[in-house]
Structures are given as C-alpha cells and as structure tokens.
Amino acid sequence: MCIWPVIDPAATGSRIADLRRRAGLTVRDLQDIFGFRTPQAIYKWQRGDAIPTVDNLVVLAAAFHVTIEDIIVTTMDD
Image (cartoon, rainbow, N blue to C red):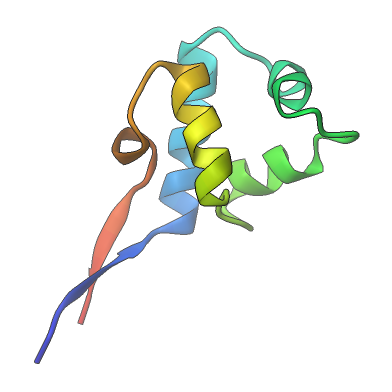
C-alpha cells in the first residue's frame, strides 16, 4: 500500500490568509499584484474552494517572502 501526500485545500487557504495578513497585505493588494479584475480567485483560495496554480504560488511566495512549501499544507492520503 502506498501513502501519498495530498494538498489540504482548507488548511492551505487558511495558511494563505494568515501569510497575507503577516505580510501586511490586503486582498485588494493581492488583486493588484496579480492584475485580477475582481478578488474572487483570492477569496476562493483563502476559503479552500480552489488551489492557486503553480505560477500563482510562485507570485504568492514572492509577495509573502516565503517558499511555496511554506504556503502549501499537505496531508497523507491512505
């Protein structure tokens, strides 16, 4: 039997919200950084309704001054 790590969307979303606050950024600030017309994607990430793409994780990591691994929360799938 293999056990594989999987991304926990809710915990990752909570981590994104926490890192955003620690970086002193608002949702609007992130919206501007990404050039999004609306903040809906950011709210979806924070709620755990969606996971940012790899490209967006790179931008989040730079904005938060952390690594991608610091953003993603994984659990073991058995």
